Image (cartoon, rainbow, N blue to C red):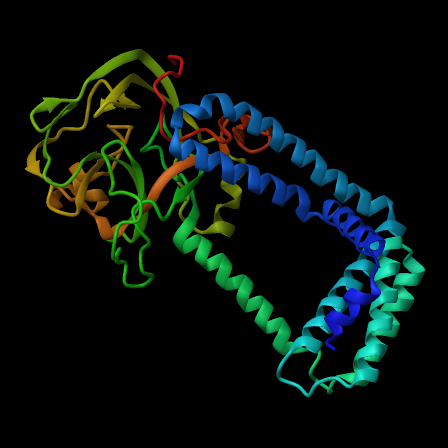
Length: 425
């Protein structure tokens, strides 16, 4: 009889119930507990907002409050580790015991070694049952003694080098790394807003999540999207793309898609002969911009304490692309542009919402105006901007210590896309 089968006959329903309760208590006192709980809630929020953007105005305050509760929860656990030393030591001992149980069960079930003899199975089963009951009772002394006894028994009955070792560690580390790479490559990726080209939709210092699978997963290194997963890019989508002309990731809004005729004459934009409808909401809107430090992380640290934010006055308008609203800024003296062209297949024409402070398709995508109109190929698109998850922008919490840059809690979990029912600014 296998070790697992022997254990089932030895453990009573009460033993199993107490063990489950103990494990849940340990999970809820782990530092990963508030992070995991909030991560699940945030994933659900992202899914709902992606399906129905008009759900975010109502859900955003609840998620902000829930996030604050989880933050307090996390720091309470951190503080508990500093004052409740016996509890933490006992918890660590239980973690060691759980790892040993898993290791022994996996090794016993492995097909790579010789089958265990009946006496060995009985011996290991006795030790495992004792350890499981000690865990259920949460008796730190019994847990430590039973763990030592099981480890000694495992060393006697398993071949040397069979249990644990560098191979198991390397396997676990590799699996975790592959999962992280898969999520970043195919599901979601964070992106920091480095410039003011997308103000007022996205401010300098906003941190967003990019939906990597909606248009199709790019094959790493080849930069190819073999097929569409959900849908192709649409007018009004805010996208992050690999700008090969300057060797950086850019974020802009799609204004025209394949086959569209795009005309731009200074501040007047027409798509397929129809001028984009705009309504001015604030003729003297104040936004804040600052220079981007590109000297490297360490070299840029001194700039964190320098207040180099500057106010800029612009005209704020609500523009619509195929009925989808978004904000744009225009200044008194717009950048000169005179464009009349058609978007080629599998490409898009992009512009920044801060129309007079954006290196976009009108101006060679930052490679220089002499390059003329530049389009973004589908294969260069990394994904669609979805939600702001953190904002370190002008003003906010601790801004007096960091040169005017602070934590903007009001922007947390704001959707990048507009619903249309938002109040006027």
